[in-house]
Length: 330
Image (cartoon, rainbow, N blue to C red; front, side):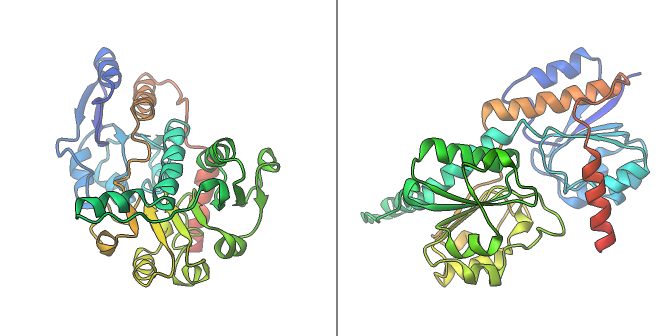
């Protein structure tokens, strides 16, 4: 049977043609998002239409979308985040879900460290000032002499810790995670969030978006950070209250923030007006190797599903349990 595949994620096949070639070789009828951008919530159901398999990006695939797309049988997520997919609705409708948890990790971790360097050494600020005819050298801080708080020590947070320890001898790392990984006992000081907010020069967020983490950084938390603190978020936009952050940056209550992710994307809010905010367009995974790997792995899952073969990376049961707990909490 020829499966109908809709590819919502953009770009697709631009860096490496292998995913497109694989779909063609598998004789699958596929269609790539014609809008060339992230689908907005009201566009998702019509875009998916009667497709049986979606190679998905970050657009919301809700229970309502699934109800409007009765032919949908599989969602192959390009990436690690699952907050945009209603897993419980998918299970109820017998829709299989896979993801690519390892593929983007290396790229996101490197971007996080890069954003730390950018803010610590005023790189983007200097570029902006020179373009506006200002030659002003601002004293920064070396990462090797900083205390860095890593919130979330999973695939990406763990890589950030290794990069910091390997590249910046002398750096002090405070870490927090609900599950303490003994592999990092010699590399970090495990502590609570209060200590991280109060003691760190840099705070880097690497947690999934859940009921527990949504809005974890708001006015109260920002008020407890040091005035020279830098906040970096390459995880999910909803983790930070963006309006509270904009106020804190405007009032110089913290020194700076770098965000690659936002509550609503594309982002057009007040942070765009602040020179102590460095903003990037959800490009954490956008290196040639990691992006290609994500697309290839998700495509492989789509092909496997079309052949009645099991997924290599099905969403684990723990994610469904987490979704159920979130639903009960509501």
